[in-house]
Image (cartoon, rainbow, N blue to C red; front, side, top):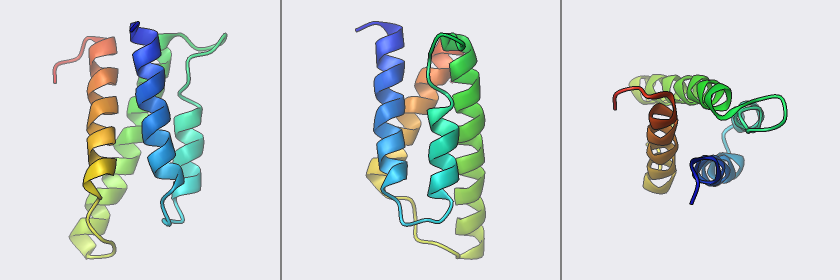
Length: 97
């Protein structure tokens, strides 16, 4: 599988998880993730940078929720999909894990 295809698949899987959340922020998160697709105007590196920004925002929300006791812990399937996409973005950009 190509790097482009794997990025697209990882993004699609995580976005589907986020879309299914009952969290009111999920709609905004989904929009940010959908804006991180590779297309005619966005190459893979630019898409990965946009995706990392979206993932960092999502993770900050989860950390804040956990610290305040405002929400349940992040489900393992969601966390696994997050970690996979996050790692893939870092690899695309040549960043250390």
